[in-house]
Every structure is written in structure tokens, then in C-alpha cells.
Length: 411
Image 1 (cartoon, rainbow, N blue to C red):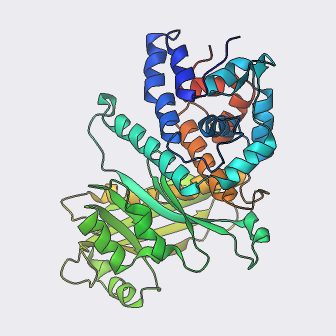
Image 2 (cartoon, rainbow, N blue to C red):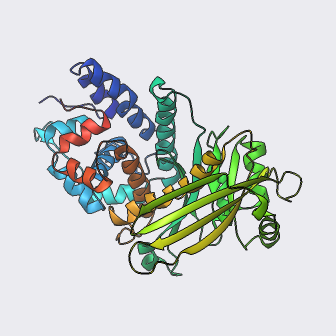
Image 3 (cartoon, one colour):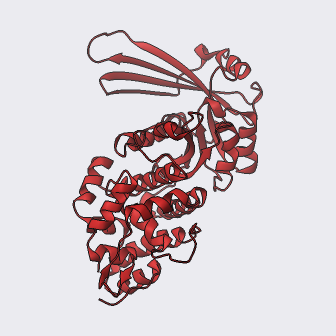
């Protein structure tokens, strides 16, 4: 077999000629673009003695995570078992003297992923996902464009607590598009600060014009509201609790009994019945919060389907910069409820990828693996599988399926 170029992009281009027109379209939209974005990540290694390109290592890690790999060891085992056609498509080094491909071993993968610039990798992945989502939004099959909604929330990687001298686990703040669950940006929160100081730097590079940003009560900060509306030309829906006592008191004292419900929904699932009502009232002149146009009250009533039959009631409040003419109550309710989709993403990372039990605790490893897991979920979510776990098992049974999902058919 002839030697392959050390460039993943060059080796991939040699195989395009063998693809059908449809496969070429998929490849043009996904794999080369992803490879090109990953190629922008700086290589932390000394160039002397490097045997595997950083792009090929990263793309192999992505493919392994799509197949369910949860650790550096699992990524190394996946690469070791991958057939030559798959390794060729990923741009893995071909050894002329040995006459075969030489996949990276677990030690190489661990060393590189623990030392690679996590912020640069996150930026590369986020920009690729943003470009793909923008192309999807322009697709005529979607019909009328829906206003984008981006959820901001944090997650603690609990397994990393044991490697910290002060016992603090790695905490990551992420911004994810609600509809696709694609994480567009993620940043590590310094142990000496909290999420509040990371909010603006996290969102600053993103194009949020016209989008709705949702966040929990921690981020109901005047500076955040001003930043979103004035600088990013976006809208916000921010939950409000007692950490903002003055604003919370203003919201709770509004005459909600006189405000009719704008949205009402009843659901059953997870062993309980739920009844949600949402009320909106204009507050442009009555709430001391930047750009607040409406106040929101959400009342949730829940009752177990078995056992106790009494309803429990929970009332929450929020503010939004959206005026009544800019969004219907049903849309506001969907975005407010959709915020917790990022919690579902975190649940998948914990349950399917076993993140909180992960033994990856040092260097940039925890954040890098969280980035790869986010990317894997974003790639697998649009596929026709009942769950991410099912999708991982499907790809684990045949390595070539991973390439098809990435848009690169094996030679």
C-alpha cells in the first residue's frame, strides 16, 4: 500500500474521487470542515520526533467517542482495533517499512489530550458546530426560521475532585443551542471565582444577534443583561430568585391574580402528571432591571401517578427583554422550558459517558474529554437512534459506521 500524506486533509481528498455525488456533498459539509477546524488547534508537542499529526489524533478521538469511548484507554483500544480502511480515512500514519498503519497508542493519546490547548480545541469545535447549524437554518426544508435560543449553564466534573489539592472539582460553564443541544462554547471556571465572571467571556465570541439567551438565577445580573442587549444584540430570559432580593420582591408583588394565563400545558411522564401555566405582564417602566420588557410567572403543579394524589405546587419568576410583540406566550414558555435541555445534555455525559466517574483528572484532560463528549452528542443527536447510548453501541459494532456518520466513507 502506498504511503499516505501526513496531512489528514490531503489523504481525505485522495478518496473523494471514489465517492458518489451524495457522499461528496456530505463530505463537503462535514468531515473536511471538521478536519480544517481541528487543524487550527496548536500542537503542544516539540516537532522533533512527532509521529502522528495532531489533527489525526483529534479526529481519531472524536470517532472513538462517537463509538462510546469514555476514557483515554478506550480511545487507544478503539484506534488499535480499527481496520486499515478506517485508519486511512482518519489520516493515521502509514509506516512504509512495516507495510501497515501505526495507530497511536494509549500513552500518546493521553499525553497529547492532557496537554493540548483546551480553549483552542473548544473554539475549533464550537465554530464547526456553529457553521453547521447556520447551514441547517438556511435549508429550505426548515421553512420559516425560528428565533434561536441558547442556554447557559454550568456543570461540575465531580470525579476530578480527588486530583485537586484543595478538593475542588473542575467546573465548566457551557452555552448550548436549545434545539440541537450543540455546545457552541465551553470554558473552565477558575476555582478562585465563579460562573458570573465567566459569563461575558464565554459568550463574547459567539454570534447571538437576534437570539434568546436563557440562564438560571445566578446570571440574573444587571451587567449580563446590559451586555446581551447592548453589545450582542440578543434577548434574554433570566430566572430570578432570592439571590436578587430586590428584583425578586418586585416580581412577586406584581398583581398576578389579575393577569390571565398566556400558556397552559398538561403532561404525563416519569411517573407523574404535570400542569404548567405561564403568565406574562409588561413591566418596562416598573422593574429596575436593564431592558426588562416583561415579567414571567411560571406555576408548576405535579402529582405522582401512583401513591399520593395531592398536587405539589412550585412557582418561579423570570424577566425577559422580549416585548409582547416579539414573542408569543407559547414561544416564551418553550424557551423557558427548553433551557433545561442543557441539563439533559449533562445527564447524557454522566450516564452514557460516565463523566462523573471518569478517572481523567489531570492537566487539560477533563475539559478536553468534556469537549469531545459534547461534540459526540451533537453529532449523534440528529441521527435516527432511540438514544445516544443506542447510537454509541451501533457505531461500536462496526468502525466504518463512524466514518459514515462523520461523512467520510472508507476507501
